[in-house]
Length: 347
Image (cartoon, rainbow, N blue to C red; front, side, top):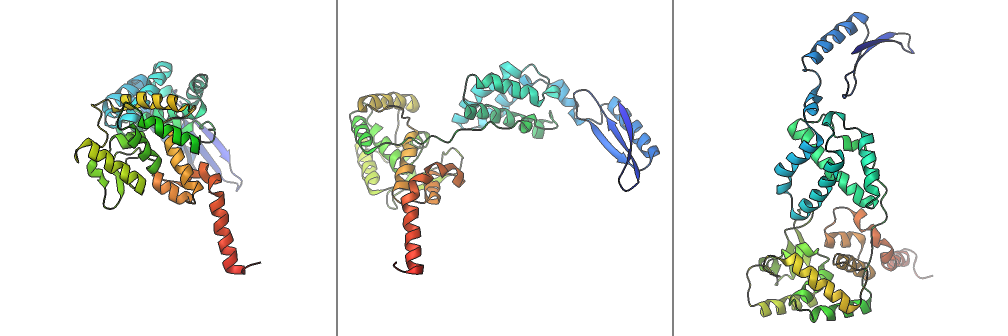
């Protein structure tokens, strides 16, 4: 279990390195200048290993990955926001089926990479990365809060390269056809919902949870409290969106409750009406979330900087809005031209 290596250093000194090995656990090492000290430490550590007092990973031998996932589902997942719950439930179910029988003590990088290769036959690289992000969240809790792991094994797995983010936005003709189809929808609030999505870049879930108390008509602003990153976001509302929202409030006849009520099935009802509107407008390869991309693209094409776009959409970093950089070219060129004229004058 313990070995002592004599090592000659470049400065002429001699040291003794002790290695403590145990199956399923990382090797422990210590270096001493005297052989006697190394021998004493090795004997003490061997005794501690026998008493199960030295290796903190011993708890990992008592639990499987499946038990870890199950405890996370029961104790942690119910407190996450709904979309995250749904996604992680799917991710963890698959991971449990393919890795659940492994003891936490023996989970290694090659187990995870093999499972990822299987997963890649079913989903793209970005989705595969999300699966292992979910697993990493489970392992982090197991390490920090439960003491079941000494380290998070997912941290040793390199993420797969992901393709550039999708940028699909409506053309002028598509936007007109879509809005007309939404106005003809049997769902009375589909048109105002889509107009607000185009005006603010808000996600569907954020809009469906919006209440009238979150709308400030005097300042022409909407405040979203139920956001993806859990950080409230205030967004200015243009004049057209303001008028549409005022008309919808008048039509609904109330200033309380949700702006878009739907009897507890808002997601399902909205999805059906949305699909029907797309079909009538003859628009293909377009999702509701692409309205967010459309808003960002329109902002970029009308002179907004990447920082301003990130502020409207609620992105924490500019990396998330780099996909719209090529659309800000005209604005950037104008800024440079104004600067050179001010510095150098007219040619």
